[in-house]
Image 1 (cartoon, rainbow, N blue to C red):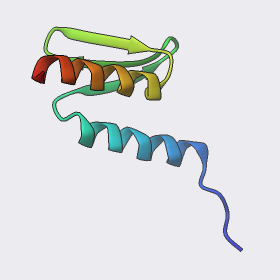
Image 2 (cartoon, one colour):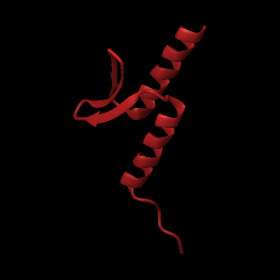
Image 3 (cartoon, helix red, strand yellow):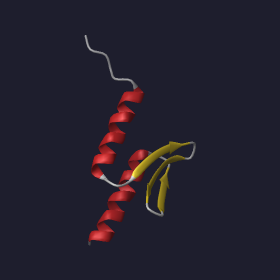
Image 4 (cartoon, one colour):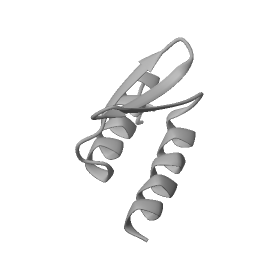
Length: 64
């Protein structure tokens, strides 16, 4: 029988995915949610999923 991974392990994997998807960005968890920082730009959202969605929009706007 297998056991489900711990919440910390799942969050660590999601954070690793975010770091691979958005190289150059530093991710940090705090009481208000999650912050991604790159150079002088800091973006904060209540969840890592919401932050990644915002970063995708930001990336599209810069590339498009």
